[in-house]
Length: 190
Image 1: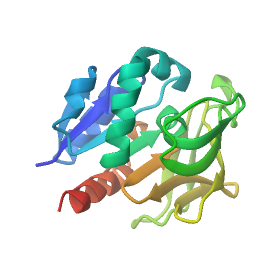
Image 2: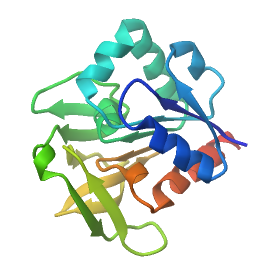
Image 3: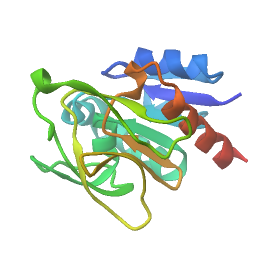
Image 4: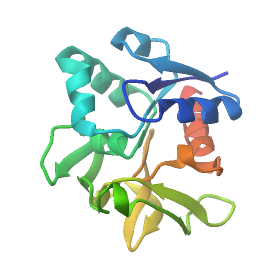
């Protein structure tokens, strides 16, 4: 059984919890840094990346960074921004674990939210992608594998033990993205 934490400070962390439990994992809502200690993996959900930084504080951000550098982590939307090496529009500090450049809110405001379907490298055909004030990955490093794209820009990527999406797979009926993360965690745990 995999113990997967979900950073439960903001965003739809409960939708991630439900999806992970549906796929057979034990989901732990993480609200304090010490809760990271016994986890096999972590999901950083959407929300507002700058608010995450404020809520975590310096000590919480340090503990989160240590976890991300050591264990499998999956960031969606704001979580993707926090994992990025470079954030623009506006510039923002992050963990820097993913060799990507991310532009915040690149697909527009709340009113520009959309549900699209696009090709992916995940088995099973096109992938539903739910966008809400989504960032855009504008650059990927050589170690980053693009698993899905939108208009030529990566929207689902993997680098080593890290997975990131600019969309919200927790709001789709498609379970493949979370299943891919659980496979990554199980592989790393071995």
